[in-house]
Amino acid sequence: MQVLRTIDALSSIHGPLALAVGVFDGVHLGHQEVIEAAQEHATQHHGTAVVVTFDPHPAHVLRPGSAPKLLCGPRHQQLVLSQSGIRFLLTCPFTVETAQTPAREFIQQLVRAARPLGCISVGHTWNFGHNRKGDIHLLMEMGQQHDFAVYGVPPQKIDGFVVSSTLIREAVSRGDFAGAARFLGRDYSVFGTVVEGRRLGRQLGFPTANVDVENEQLPPPGVYAVQARINGGWLPGVANLGRKPTVSENAGLSLEVHLCDWSGDIYSRDMEVRFTRLLRSEMKFGSLDELKAQIARDIEAARS
Image 1 (cartoon, helix red, strand yellow):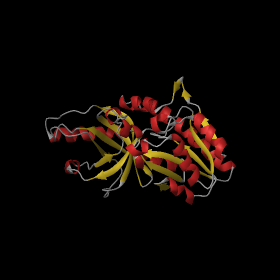
Image 2 (cartoon, helix red, strand yellow):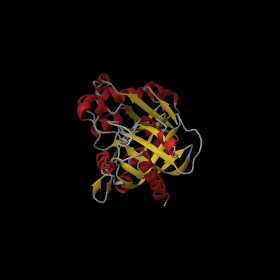
Image 3 (cartoon, one colour):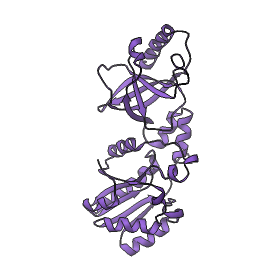
């Protein structure tokens, strides 16, 4: 997938362009409907679908004290989108200055850059531009002026609930992975890079990968059966999400993953981890021998 960083870069893509525009945190089922509308238009008109999003999340700039925790960091979002068949992603840098851009001017920038602009697909209730004055009605008005189609995708409902990032965050925060998957349309996972740790797991006989996760919304601390993906393949494992009370005082929250069927160096590699089941809560042990014995039991429980 090609990632663009400026609106002007749209001019390099074969048109007509079908733009799916939104924040798309989590790329849940509602977001997928918006994206699929653009993909269908591109197919019908022999054009190209492009997802248009913003980094950082606008709420982190406009109201940093109350911004939601992200379900997907930028690279995780790119991974999910690429797996859905998206070939082009435009990530617009979002700053305080960006927030001052009038809604009409933002759309005009897209019109000028596209060769040509075929459609814009958004969530029906999405607002954008300075003071959030842009909405589906403005898009339809400008679509008539500049000859592009507009798709306002209605909210998606599952079991009577409107699919939203908020609901998914709530499910993840209480460890309800089945509930999160129901709204995501895929298993909930976290993504990050394996970084150097203290190598205590290796000393205990159970080497672990310390994953510097992009995700801000995490499940409750504990020991989990997981599946981890490196280089495209999923491997079973056991993960500790917590503060390692046995070996450290006042440590920050970290994710350590022991892969059951892996040997070799994985430092600096990207890893995606999906949580299967909570095995137990994190606890403090009286000695490293007690910790080692419990890790062995956890691995067996994860395998089963």
